[in-house]
Length: 95
Image (cartoon, rainbow, N blue to C red):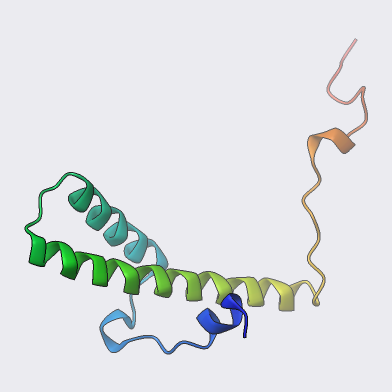
């Protein structure tokens, strides 16, 4: 089983149910900042690490769900964004 498949098949823990991706990322960022600043005692650091690990898995699963939705919307064929190198050379050049 690949890593992508494993994150998509994980059940969301009850304490993360209903948490938005943005809220999870904000909480994760706050935990990381606290741990990096050395603001937490050892036991709290371990708890923060555990919570952070759960948040990372949750966010990865949410991203996987969105990726699958995009694939469905694009009929299974993701289309690359047009990059600026593919535009005509004289576009935007007004003389």
